[in-house]
Image (tube, rainbow, N blue to C red):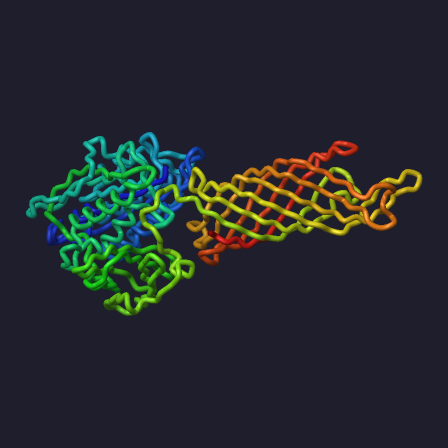
Length: 551
């Protein structure tokens, strides 16, 4: 149950055209409450991009939606009590604005898990009906609710959910807009989907791109409600129709009366406008290089210019071709328009793509294709036992070869197969009876092989860098050999060997400074039952540093 998303096509009811929606003489105050929850409880997989989707929505509201940062309340991974407290604070701000004579718009957004009509907030839950009640009883003139979760359509069923085919909200222009709109990312029995490739949910991704200008099919420099919704709906259905979970259909319920067809965004007011001239054709991606955050996608057709509105910053614009990429850096440090030209873009191989935040494929399923990695590493092995083993298992350097198959069954499940070997010169001490302890020079060697099933968890949302941790069970076979050397070796004995199979666990921390490779530190712990002469319960501890190549 991953998710995907809703966003703002009815934000037009008021967000960016106050003169068209509310009374012309009133001041419009805008507030937003954005809620992101990665953890839906022990039985649900942890989401990867809930926080990033909320950040993307906040950026759109501020950049082109007329919101002030100070008027956007947000919480990431808070429990139900924290969310309800923020709703109370939001209502206090609304009532203060109403007391000043302002008209008020409220946007409430949730990105996370939902199940059985409840929002799943860590180990706590919040009824969808309570979220709806909070919106209905708010003093705000217009309340817009967006629910981004599996089965989110349950919240719209109370007053009739509708499969969201393109529509336009049109009402009498002589009336002020009043009422409520709730939009869900999927129907009550559908899975909302997110994608590793676009680093977020499908619907939010396409809605944000459309609001920044790519939905402006009339080429008048404005994005209307009708344009934004038609763009987001069509692109989302097309992108999810080929995934394992199937096409995702947003639902909506609204009771809104007020102004007619309205403008949602005006890209011409942005600090920077990136223009794709009419002669260009293809799919372009825009990445914020400073934050490594995916910003927008432009599906460019010949015959008309497209524009994307951006805040001040440094960006990369990338176009994917069959055999390579075209990339250019955009220095949006001064207000104005930057025109993209394929002829001046840099030709770059796929593995040299410096715009890491940009996807290669935006139609990927929530279950990614299986990927493979190979590694070589070095480490140490230490065997611990309850008694002195007389040098039976000396500390040994190990060399390891490793292979992994990623995204098995679930996107975070990995199969790891390893082969290790090592050798060290050591001294073996044995009890010689009347002769006392006797030392023998030995060459201690080992060959081992193991299979582990690992659960991988990216920490990009938490740490802001490409760090992944993983852990899981491992089964290994260990083969030890002692070769006795020199004149001191035991009479008639040149070699001893011991083979055993042992259960254990493996864990790692990986960092990806490059797209094609990553560095990793790993540790293993195995149980060893040594049953020669007497049964000894021992532990095998190993640590490695390795370099991985992603195939």
